Amino acid sequence: MTTNETAAAGAPHRDRTLWLIAVVLVLALAAIIWIANRRQPELAARTAKTGMPLTREQQSVDFQTADLTFDVQPNKHRIDGRAILGFLVKAPIAKLQFDLDPELPIQSIAADGQQLQGSAWKNDAGLVTVNLPAPKNPGDKLSLTVVYGGKPHVAKRAPWDGGIVWSHTKDGKPWVATAVEGEGCDLFWPCFDNSMVEVGTVTQHVIVPKGLAAPSNGRLLGVDNLADGRTRWNWQARRPNNYAIAIDVAPYKLAKTSYDSRYGYRMPVEFWYLPGEDKQAQKLLAEMVQTIGFFEATIGPYPWWDEKMGVVETPHLGMEHQTINAYGNKYKAAPEGFDWLMNHEFSHEWFGNQLTNADWDDMWLHEGFGSYMQPVSLAWLNGRMGYDAAMFKQRQTIANKFPIVSGRHQTEEQVYDPKTGPGGDIYVKGSWVLHTLRGLIGDQAFWTSVRREVYGRPDPKPGNFQPRFGSTNEFQAITSQEAHRNLKWFFDVYLRQAKLPRLVTTRQDTTLALQWRTPRGLPFPMPVEVDVDGQRQVLPMTNGYGSVMLPNPNSVVTVDPDSKILRQNDAIDRYRDEEAKKPKTS
Ligand SMILES: [Zn+2]
Image (tube, rainbow, N blue to C red; front, side, top):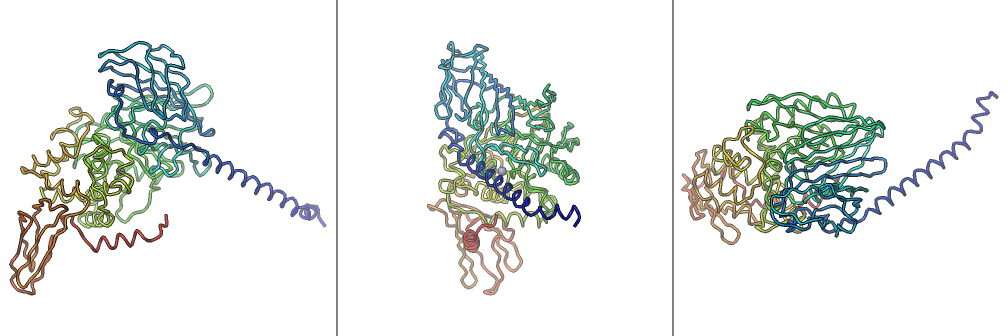
């Protein structure tokens, strides 16, 4: 017997012990994770919502600057923050209010540099009220420095259920992201959690452990090496959407190039990705440059031409974080030969970030337009087949349960919850409404209308436009002007009613009769093209009726041969409902 054999003889026992220890450790870890997740407190009512009406105090100031320092501690799942908020007073105030998750306790607040007593502020279920040392009058400036920190709300299912994502790369390094569109900016910084408030300038200082990078919104001001080995990443962004302000931390690598615009400017294009993906990253970077060129030619100048086009790889699928879009599509192969997610989030730089909905009720302006840009891009990349295939896919999921636009104030949640609002229809039905509108008024009027809605003018050039807020009513007015006819009937039926218009066709002998049926009998003079034995005719459908004389009873007829019109389709509805019953695999 050799020594080795002796050692081997004792091995099974030791193996068992080690095995037991490992099992106990794994179980303990699972228990800790389970308890940690279970213990996450429910969000306070106000914190959970975004787009709540602004309070009187919030309406009394212009939110001009936010200088935000985030000390990100991935091992503790903790962020310590310091926010210096700058306001211009518009109406007399004795106190100021802002939104912040009460789970991030405030340690101190200073007003214009003067430390306040702890009794001067309170966080009431997410709404912080600060009694100012002295009243402020119109024209006064006010600076609040808020020091706070704690464990930010963890997203369970980002980006649909928002918060912070504490993840890890394959080799165990921290990989952190935020996604707060549904709940709002108050999940990690003191803000006015309403889409109508965009801070003039946001400066971010993100402090991260050694070896990690923190790409963010806007321009990079510089990276500081701290004495303890950590780094501080300083960024500055112009007029970002509140929910677009993001923290991203990982051992990122940077793929970078520059873009020369048809509008005469040069701009950095950056993709921050995880190590080991150099080849895929270079490919996506090339696609980003190609995409911005097409979007500029189609819509108009990239709104953040003086900052950058930025994309960052995230553990969650995606989000339209201004100039640092979240990308989590894992470079998936697609027969279309493009990355739909990068394309979709990038479209939000125009529809969402440059043009922001005046109320969440108008959110189809972000998602309908954002979703229409994928078929439009595919027409450019792959020709007609790409466009039609993408439109047909979108068509199959339209639910028609709630109108896209209710005409009332809505929070983001109300719009997204399929029990209270249109949910996915703001994407797919919104896209189809635009397709139908384009077919009705033609390319020239359509794209000019889009341009005016996005930039507030038909002739945008870098420097002659600012980010703006838009509404459905405004878009209706613009398209009516561009098309030289009142299009209220179009928007009333497609956006303000849940059900689609139905085209009833009756064929008798050599007569084909067509009739539009709409919810509540609303007027719908939508012209319809009809092919009869290969001959195209257009029925004006004035008053909702039209008819065609057929050459003979056997004539071959195709109604709407180019599929220009969104209308009720029973076969698609049956298919959609059966698909919905199938168990979900992902
Ligand atoms: Zn989107």
